[in-house]
Every structure is written in structure tokens, then in C-alpha cells.
Image (cartoon, rainbow, N blue to C red):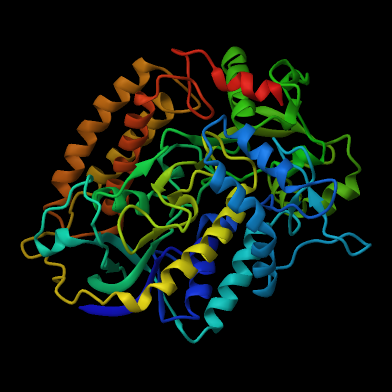
Length: 528
């Protein structure tokens, strides 16, 4: 069965919805999302969104903070474009209905987070991502040119390969014609043809045991584009958020926003002592890679499963007002953050790599764009500066929509793409084959490809992942599609990319910290 649209948007986070609202001014937009429209990484973003707003802050300061945090691996052009485009992006969000907190005097209330030298984080209490998603979803649902298909899972993007032609990663004329999409409830595969396709499916956090990402973050977009022979970069740089609430029975892990450390919270050892100034002059407000590594080191030394975040010295009423969601969540576990230490541990949080795109958000495959966490714009380099990701998504969504709309009338739908054929396929009868491989994959990534790595660990991870990859591919090619199998397949492919690209790096830099090479990036951070 075929559907047709001008713009096909795969994913429903801030990047996809912002693109859809802009693109809908030029044509019809179809958004596909594998769960409810609001189930995405955006909704879980607590801290806020970066934007130079008031003096003494400046574009140059924000650019410098981003470059330093990125450990010399950022694309300066991308950094400048995002930083200077941020005020316009904030105006877009406000126009679409987003509310940001203000002071009693009517100015925007600005937080400061790790790696920032100034207060520049706009926020809505400690639920900024949820507020942005609320506003964008509401605007999308009101727009007559936008159709939303919930519970629809994108399986593969369509290229010349599906017309029987050879496609390889060195070709510069690959084109995207849309995607095969699984209608989960009706158990059928749609062929959605589009003039422009946008991949914005979020992150890869479920590769790891402990993650702040929702269950839908399974690297689908990155895996699809890689299979379509698109270029994927910087996958070695996986950011672990230093402070997730220690509660092993809960998944995803509840995030304790970095803004709390900007507010004055201090990381402490089980014996109550501070420790971060041993590792960085900015102490608990050091860049995330430094904090996560330092915590990992202290936990291994002491054998502790978690450390503590201490905000007890701050005024109780102010803490409850600034972080109501965190306060209430901790109370459900018997923790009063105004009186008790908060148990925290690092968790997989953000992928700095992804589908390589240019300054317009277009990938190496023509008519295929990537936005948000699925994309590698060059902004983050080897380590993301806190709260840069949401503004990156908004700025690039505008750029991509303008670029794609300008060329919309130059392309036609490719009607010769065949529909999905699952003749001879059988339903997967033994789900244990999927669930066990899922557990093994998470073990491999958590133990061997985590915060601290080594050549030996990566070699062992690669050998074990190849076995799981072969088993899963064999199952995939004889089974009728289901979401669990497709997600496992995508995660394995993304995990393989992370391992391969990490093994190719002959240095310790940013989020790729290996005991086999001197930590060059640490010297950069110390200069800060």
C-alpha cells in the first residue's frame, strides 16, 4: 500500500516537529512516530535550552565554551551558526507557544550548567523539554497541512537500491524516495513516497543498561541511513550524564538535571567528602565527560554503586520552587532533597555522532535530511556542552526546512518503488531469541564500551557483537517484521558503529576515554 507526501518526517521530538511546522508552509507533511507523538527524548530534557540572552554573555563566549567542551573536534562553522541562530530559534519556540520562566522583574530566568562560563540556559522549571514538546505538539495538531501517524515504525529509507540498482557508500548520487513504514496496529508495511525525507528518531541510549533515554531511543534513524549507505560520523562519542537518580528498578533512569549543580549542588563521596576539585578547577560544574569519568573512577576505587549530590545547604523553599519535579520524584523514594543526600550514578544520555549533515541538515544522500540527536552536525565535537542540543535541533530544523522547500518543485515522487514483499516470511515464535540477544548487547556495550575504554575491551566487544549481529540478521531475513526485532537489529548496527569508530581513534579525546592513550582532552578542559 502506498501513501504520498511532500515531506516525510520520521520522529516526533523537537527537531521533527519544528521542521514540520516550517515545512508545512510549503507543502503537505506526514510525521510518523513509533509510539505516541510526545514519547521522545525531548520530553525528558529537564535543564533547558542555550541562548545568549543578556550581557555580560556574548556569542563569542558561547562559541568558546562550546569549542572547549568539544575538545577540539567541533566544526567552527556549525558552532557559530547555531549560537548566532539561537535567538531566532527561541523566538520560534515562543511563537509556537513555549513558556520560559521569568524573574519577578520580567526578565528571563537563566540557569548555568557544566562547562558554561555564563548564565544562558532558558528553562521552564525543571521540565523544559516537556514544555517545549507540549507546545510543539499542540501547534502541529492544529496545522491543516500536517498528518501524524502514531504507532508507525520506519523500517528502511528508500533509495535506488530498492529499484534494483547498485548503491555503495562512495557514490555521490544516492537519492532518497521515502521509507517503508510498519503500521504497528494493523500489522502491515506501507510504502510512503516523499519528495523530502527527514530522519529525526532520537538517540541510542538503550544500548546501555542505565540510560536516561525512553524505550523508543533505539538508534533507528542512524541504522537506517547506514544501511542506505549514508555517511555516519563521530559515533565513538557517547555522553554519559553524571547524575541520574540511583534506582535500579526504574527504566529509563530518572535524570537529575545539571542545572541543579549550576544552582549550587555539590557531588560527594559516600563518606560525605567533596571530590571534584581533585579532577577539575570547575569542581562539580566541570564538563560532563570529566565529571562522569571522575565519578566512575571514585566508584571503582570505593566499590560504591552510587555517589551523592548534596543540595541541602541551599534554601529549601527556593530548591522546591526551582526543581519541583525532582523534589516530588525523590519524595516518592523517601528522599527529601532539602534534607537528604541524593544518590546518583552516571547513565548513557546523548550521542554526539550520527548521520553526517551539512549546514542545511542534508545528509550525503540527496533529499534525505537528519536532525536532532540522529544527526552529526559538528556542533558537539567530542563532547556536548550542556543544553546545546535542543537549540541545535531548532536552528537546524529551520535551515533544513528552508533548504528543502526551495527545491521541492524540482523533484518528483518515485512511483516505481515496489511495495514491501514478505512472502514466505513467518512470525517469530521464540521471542527469547530476541530478548536474550538484547540483554547480551547491553552487557557488551555497558562493560566494554562505556565511560572508560581500552583496546582490549573494544576488541572483545567487536568479536561478541559480530556473533549477535549474524544471529539477528539470520532471524530478520526469515521472519515477519515486528518492532522488537527491528529495534534490536538497529541497536546492534549502531553498537557496531560505535565500537568500530572508537577502535579507529588512536587518542583519548572528549567522551572517548581510553586507558591506552594519554588523555589529551583533559589538558584542554583544565585550561578552562
